[in-house]
Image 1 (tube, protein in one colour):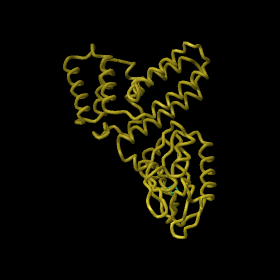
Image 2: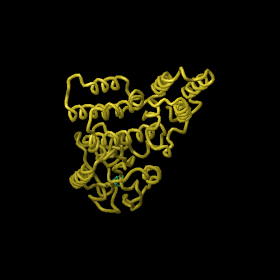
Image 3: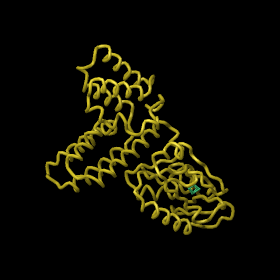
Image 4: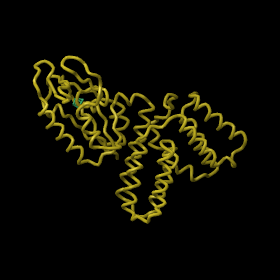
Length: 315
Ligand code: SF4
């Protein structure tokens, strides 16, 4: 099971300023089958519920937390509560963080800042800023951005890959396990960042004869950075063509033609990625191509999350 820290209101806790929640069904019902959640809410901890709304006001470049009606400066109470919530989630072996959009605390690039009474644009909320500072190269998203299928696909893929990385770190015993891990992630890494994929290959080759724990640490640091990249249609098409290259000789001319046509249709956003994936998987099974069947790229997360099923996911 994955462990994900989540803004408590997204889990349905009636903890917002007006004592409501904002349950997100994708998180609770879909991801909830595979993840346990660590809720946090710095504002409830600092001010209780219900409470007066707050906003972030910039004063001489310093961020102050001011209540909207009574104009009280509550920065210190907020800072204390945020530190407490950060310490709480730091203790967990997290695979990701999901934040509530637009909130002064939790928004990720969607929080309004003010200069006196005037809006000063949108940035990260205060708690989101702390999380990003503490958790580098980590799967962090806000729920509103997860409505975009491509961002959601990238995020969920990153969550599961991060989980695999944590497991490898904990249980690795032999060099071969690191080689197998790298092999299984080959195409997925290539779809993210070809240059980093090559660098990871060099780390695994271990010409400097480093010990296993040093090597694994070095590998996973770059691995996490690489999976944090968002893929594109062009990179994905490249990877698909590369995969086809593995069993081109076995395919009949009809199969070859059908597969190439499907890849082109994916590039033109006529068919979704899942259609191409299913065909490759079917043919890899038919011709017994184990190397492809073991690729995470074909199954990066449980199938019932079904994120690859819409055309827009190729954006
Ligand atoms: S502080 Fe964050 S978790 Fe708490 S109610 Fe606001 S958005 Fe939700």
